[in-house]
Amino acid sequence: MTSSQVRSLIRSRIRFVILIGLACLASQAFTQQASRRLSRLGTQVHVAQSTRQSPTSLVQSEKSPLYTFTFGVIAFPRSQISGIWGINDSGKVVGGYNNMNIEIYTADHACELKGNTFSTIDYPDASQTELFGINKSGQMVGAFQDTSGNIHGFKLAGGTYTQLDYPGAKGLTVALGINSSGEIVGIYDDPVTGNADGYLLIGSTYTSIVVPGATYTYTEGINKYGVVAGYYFDTSGNSHGFTWNKGTITTVDYGNGYPNTYLAGIDNSGVMVGGYGSNMTIGSVSYPWEHGFLYSGGTFSTFDAPFGDVQVTQPWGMNNKGEIVGGYVDSQGMLYGFYLKAQ
Image 1: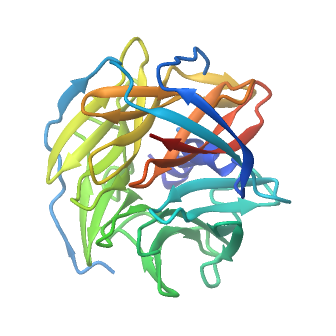
Image 2: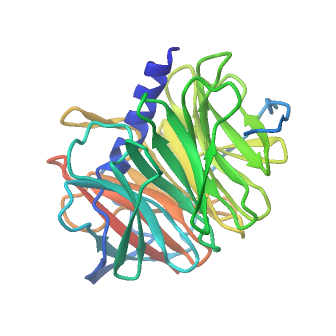
């Protein structure tokens, strides 16, 4: 697979989130019981060995729900599109916004939301910048596009930018998550296979994370114990959630007749956020995941944004206080951001 094909895949994977509105929480909130099932609704120093262990499989059905969900609307003012990706324990939110073109890979500018105040963040001399994760210390990770069109990951800590490139990657590295110790996960264009694979970065050491037999592997979130959450695509084009714990891979599928599952984040107690679905198309956009869930102790607690004509609900970021951010889309293809408190 060529670099341009990998970029196209990642565009389709993140386009939903790029289009989501991001801003101050609306004053009106909605409460939905988890038991309510709605039917609606893509300078390293040393490279460690790739992890390609055979995954164990964990397919669970929904049991008694564990949570009550309280929703709020999020919308970024005066921006055509924007994305919500991460939230830390202080409630700071990171993402990006774009007033020009909804078809580009990243947003034009990254942004951070503290309370009701937005800050624009641009990687120096980059043509585009987006933030995807933030830890409790305020360290942020994301990606930027240079003037040659190459995608690089980066970390922003204490006002200092550090460029991140997986060794030998073909012009594409993205940093998606960071834990309290500064350990980073993300994706890169594998220089051998040309596929998009996951990675873990500790200090200056990169470790490739690849689910055996997968066409693409995405590592999205990591908790303080180093447990990684993500998803992969099989050769049939279906997605599966998985965790990686010191080399052990466990697949997590919602099941119940739905072919696609993803995991996007994991907190320090092992609770994970993600979604499931069966490939819905609205307009020209395909959504493999139409419903969100929290997964805890073998139990899925499902949710859909309760704002009316909701077709797709996708959560992407979570913190250790039960706060989740993501987005939803209606039948007209309009996308909106949401904030969710799980209790």
